[in-house]
Image (cartoon, rainbow, N blue to C red):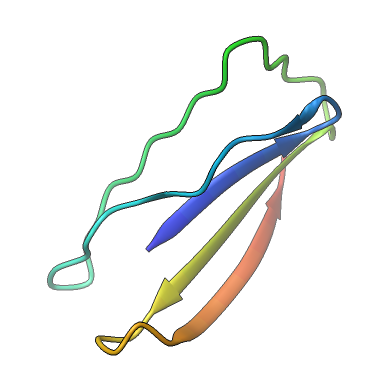
Length: 61
């Protein structure tokens, strides 16, 4: 699973961790990022064991 944060000032790199038993934990931060209502987007995507992307979505915050 990978996640990246986008906001009006740019985007973080993709951060990722392995997921086991449908559980994983990803954190990301970007110095200088300021959260304004509805100005933050979180992209996330999941991959199968062969590295193919099998799911992606965007959460708006």
